[in-house]
Amino acid sequence: VIKAFNTEFVSVNDVTWTTGNDFYKASFTYNSKHVFAYYSLDGKFMGLTRLMATSELPMMLQTSIKKNYTDMWVTDLFELANAEGTTYYLTVENADNIMIVKSSGGSDWITFKKTKKQ
Image 1: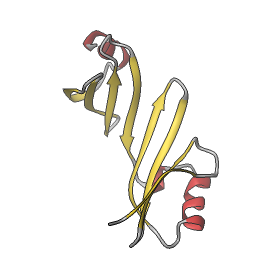
Image 2 (image 1 turned 60 degrees about the horizontal axis):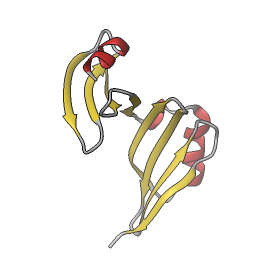
Image 3 (image 1 turned 120 degrees about the vertical axis):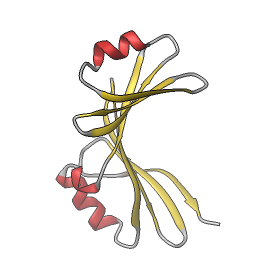
């Protein structure tokens, strides 16, 4: 896993490793951003995630948030990049609901999960 990581990420800082049930996670700084890389137990790269601000999204997705979620506030946003491409996951909520929506970078968000607050 470390060999695969060092081959992929040459100039990174502050690498720390954690282990899950079926993956390894490397947390590190890359291009001044805090990034997480995931690897299978056999060393296969699974993907990267990074936390983002809404201002870092493509313009069409920013516009869609302002248009479609006016009664909600953003509580989390991250980018997942893997062999299938890049997907954004946005968590929005209001007094009654928490909703996670996702987008592959077009102009639309698709509901991934919606729950009522207790």
